Image 1 (cartoon, protein in one colour):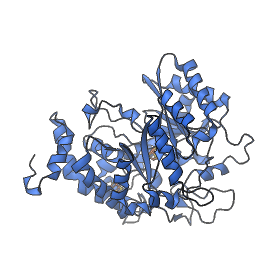
Image 2 (tube, rainbow, N blue to C red):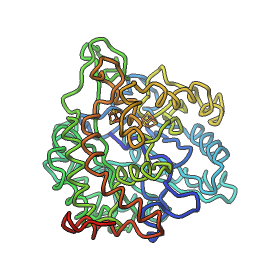
Image 3 (spheres, rainbow, N blue to C red):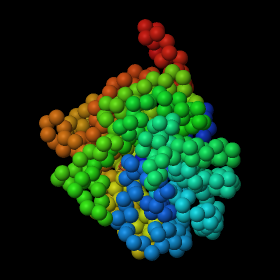
Image 4 (cartoon, rainbow, N blue to C red):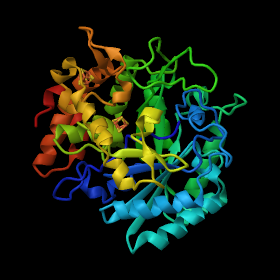
Length: 442
Ligand code: SF4
Ligand code: SF4
């Protein structure tokens, strides 16, 4: 599994300050792979990957495009059409490209050199930034020199220390990929490549929150994204059919064994938050925490799953087909192909607008009257696979965990928001949170 399209807009405040850490001076859009107000993830080689992670939702997408004569490799014609259209479509001064897979580096380094050449050809003097999400196992000196030369931001998929990482992130042989992933990381560090980490939180590693958080800090990850895995499959699907289903489909669909338990997920976030809020605010960045604080302060969160509506994060397959979201690469969510219609037309299609609006409009009544609605917004529609206590469908599988986390963090975010509103630093929360409870006065 690669990064989700969760990372979308920045959380820059309207006056241009950065919400949490104005002193960091780092562009939020350079922190997490894929962030952009109008964001497309491009798949350079479809779902092709050298690993076979148990929980990967993307590998089986080969079933949508069976028997491709070019082995699902993006052609230069599609690439140039995409680069030209995307630069034209983006109205921001910086144009951010996000390359994903499968394993995108399997498309080869010459293809990425072509990307740079075409971006220069069509860039018209605009600032162009590139990010790539990789499992790290096939990185070489040459790749890392290339990333450094062209200022790529690399998102590394790592699920924690070896016993966590190797639990699901395996080769087709069944062997774990941790060792090779760490070799890739060493090369990134050696060549001074900017990187962040994506950790998929599943039924196994959710039980090791602090071990994972401390491990990520120890390998130099300052920017962390935790992505809960919630998958819904049709056990009766035959060979060549899609097993993973969108919410609401498949009469006999089942939650997978690797799906994270809701309360485990809540505990996972709480434990990491407790260490972060006392020791690490301002030094280490956790996208979920930033986003919830943004919602607390009524500014746009940096992650689409916590936004009120979505629909700005499309995904483009290797052949130019554009879908509503990386989590919705299903035939019913195909918007069209960029060689037939412009990217702008596809992303502004009424179906896509409806897709984004339905994140809000299809919330069950239980969510609409929830005390945490402003923070949660029902999270991702893809995870809304259970029924509410009164039997209405469409509740998020992780609801109980969210409530546990929101309840726990309320006083801390309240303090941080107050500090920011008074022009002080949110980092002050570390001292406040570390004081005995009786002394905590604003
Ligand atoms: S469905 Fe919406 S909220 Fe979920 S990942 Fe896609 S864009 Fe984000
Ligand atoms: S916490 Fe649960 S009930 Fe509240 S908005 Fe989120 S998913 Fe809905």
